[in-house]
Image (cartoon, rainbow, N blue to C red; front, side, top):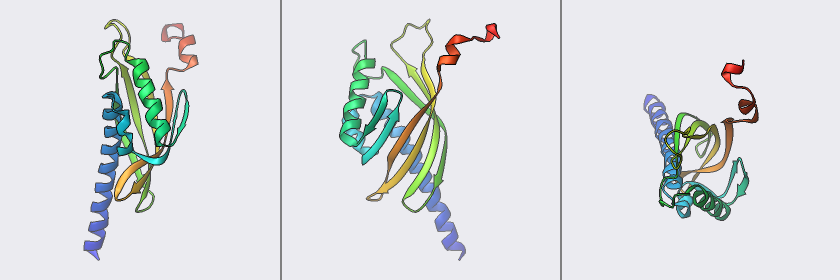
Amino acid sequence: MSNHIDSQRIQALLDREEIRALRQHYSNLLDGNNAERMGEVFTEDAEVVVTVGSMQGLPAIKHSLAAAYQEFDSQQRGHFPFMHAITNHMITLTSDNTATGSCYLLDFVTDRPSAQHPFLLVGRYIDEYQRVNGEWRIAKTILDVIWPHAESDVKTNKDR
């Protein structure tokens, strides 16, 4: 009995770590101009909801993320016009092959002069994960932007 429980706990730890690595892999692919490899992190029918709208299915995700990369690569460096730092990952395994989770996103822009604020946004990914052919994938992700928002531009701390 104890060995069975220990095996379940070990598998749960491994699953959570694979999911954390999956989210990190997404950031590395996006930041490194590798949108064509998004099949390594998303299911074929995945949905991505971000500030500019929703992408449904792997072809749309690849196309939209490649376009976003080009838009932000204003200096034509070909790598890292932004950097997605993720932290505070929370993962709940909902079955052997599904999970939900969230993590914080600190999205830095690297093409601004050093005197300017480096943050593009601070947000939170809200995710649904699915195991496909033995490997975890993101089935749905929603980017919840915490900052900036319209109200933050109206009133500053010194105005309060």
